[in-house]
Length: 215
Ligand SMILES: Cc1cc2nc3c(=O)[nH]c(=O)nc-3n(C[C@H](O)[C@H](O)[C@H](O)COP(=O)(O)O)c2cc1C
Image (spheres, rainbow, N blue to C red):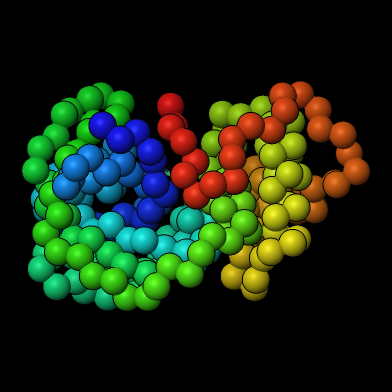
């Protein structure tokens, strides 16, 4: 099994056709896409209920930052072969059908077959600020689990890529993430101090869009 994890956005619909958008790290195994949502998960519930999902390849990282900061409504359009939607901003999408699942009280494994795929826009290259937003979104999704110093030192490091390479969308996403950190701590958002020496554990994890395995 190829163990690389790719950060995508999975769109699903409920039985009542209510769309749901969630960033999800996926693995590609031969022709299948492997999803591992932590319980409880609306994505999991929708896939089990409908048997389908749509994988979105996205470079507008506001979707990642938005979903982890309470902005879960993103423009969608219907897809072609399964009952579902894709993100309007997706560079490409893959329509998926649930082929098998391994149940688990914490993190079931869903093996999804490819039904249909379409490219909507070209991938034009890596942008460091986009990668930084994704790393920041992962940190924000773990605010309740990670030590304060680790969050601060990693956000301070990621700020370098934001300062050097962000466009308006990445600046907006980065602002949402910093606001979420500040709200979590019950104080107004402030820019991470560039001159403060990092305390505690050194920053780890890369800048790549592949953010590695999440426990
Ligand atoms: C970049 C990124 C990758 C994520 N990957 C996963 C994942 O692989 N599995 C998971 O359960 N949650 C993952 N999350 C967190 C989910 O997006 C979030 O918990 C989501 O709301 C899942 O729950 P839901 O299906 O109820 O929306 C990720 C978040 C981010 C920002």
